[in-house]
Length: 391
Image (cartoon, rainbow, N blue to C red; front, side, top):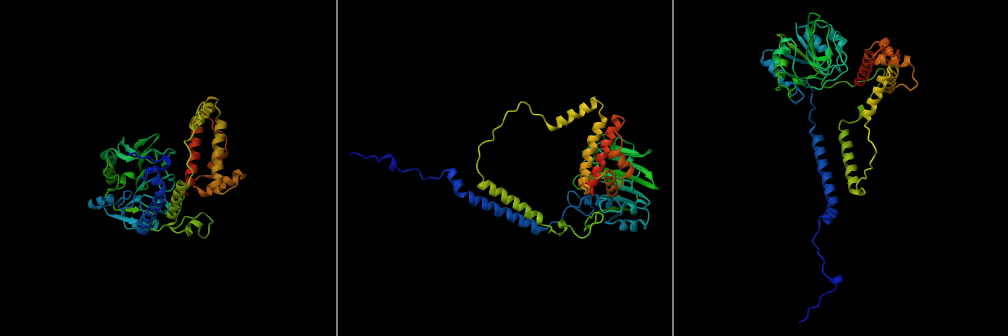
């Protein structure tokens, strides 16, 4: 019996789906499912309305809060009073000798607190201390917070040992005690002033719930606050007023936006990204062109700086630093590019606490006489920009 073989065109082909055909057929469903899942997660987050963390707040149990430290102080018999305004701190000071702890100066009228008697502990990323600690100068450098040794005779620091310190480096007045060195300064400065002891710490991470159990953080915090006096713990208000510029009236566009508008923006970005991935054109691999040499931008800046130093071109280096600073400051101050020195100095003095004569000398004065003066000028210009950026 003969068997007839069908021609190739009529042979049966495999009908089992391949991974490529399966993805092509179901990618739309997968992408739609991802959109639904992301929308559900966003709705849960929007509906939960969880309270945000309040850094260094004695009532906050989050990692950034200081609930654990406040409870330890109360167990040691120390009275801890949480206040959220300068007036409340003044009222507490009228009840007797107290220790004032300041963890945030954003919404505080420092002039009302400057005359309060007793001890004070100022913690956090502080730039200008002209009212609360006028004898302490903050350095331009910002040391990274890490475990540091005290290296000082202050009993509170020596008993605690190493602690999580950094943030800001300071230089204290003559006779002060400086601990936890960082660069050219120290991250903790303590000195006697106004009938009490003023202590300034560059970073409050050692007081948080997250870091309190590490190194000697708890011991340092307790030693600084357990002075036998009640503690007035000043924190930002729960409902802070909107910060407005001088002469500004009414509400801005951002004040009128609902609080959850950022989630709408995030969802729109995700939807656009998924659509681009779905409908985007598949291109081949990127062709890398071999260049004769690749020079990083930082190397060109360092090279130009070395040329300036070799030729003692302090005047040109100072002019470049001042020109860049003035360009950035005029944009933040709302001035035009043609603004004169008097306009820039007057506007900058109104927005900061710096002396107008010192500002004019730094921005438009003569060039530095030596390299140390050039370094000091660069640090002061950076300090001015940091003060303006915090407003």
